[in-house]
Length: 115
Length: 261
Image (tube, rainbow over all chains, first blue to last red; front, top):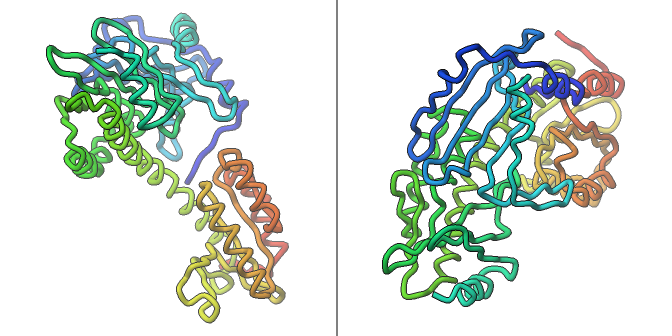
């Protein structure tokens, strides 16, 4: 069955402190996927919600990377993407906000890890 | 190589909005208005290798497609043949995941035109994934009807056999009741919404008495003008199927006589 989350639920999930394992640095070993590396790291939030960090990095261009913060829904069993952060490798356009930019979006990710 | 002339060639062949910006040695980013459905523009790089110029995506396209495949290699396999055929048709090389087109005889504009065509087709591959995910909406739509309406009271994928034998104006679900029938449409894209608008208008033109109702996958994703034209002809609509399930069932229950087995 199709699932959508309320904006308040999404905000709550984003604000939930994600507790990375103590050895998270050793766990971030990107797996080779043709010409990009990829990794999925499972972490648990302070309220017990399961989260995933899905990292990708282009071998040819180190500025071309993405980090997806997602939550794992149980019923149905689906990954729900909360945020995607990209490196400065391409233009992005937001249709609803009518804006176009060529920049990084990574600040929130740093805060999430620190939390 | 005069990069200003190259940029002009790109603009003349494709779009005046194309810009070329040097970023690195013998490496130039080509900014175009073409993008994936999620708003990310295509990565296109003009690179000078020895005595040749190439256009490359620097392996970004496959990485981008993997966002939607969610590491489900099976889904990637489904579109592998589509991708291979597309590359072959346009003479694009796939070297370990990097898409490369050599620019022949300084034909920069033509080369970019071809390269963009390929990326547009490959972005259709991710569109196919979107469609796969969005098709689950129609399953949910049908499930909702089945849960709410007695089996002998509705029919999916209905067309008027007399007026529309060629099935040009399909109705996702026709609900019968003692009064006018209820045409229920499940809408998850601009094109589907346009088709629904045309279908409802056609039945109005034919003078068929009916009531209409629409259930959106997510109304906010529909182009505002497309949505406005549709809501002009539709009697009732619900903006998001998941948020309005109770209201939808209440509305259907109020409209028809229920008999749930």
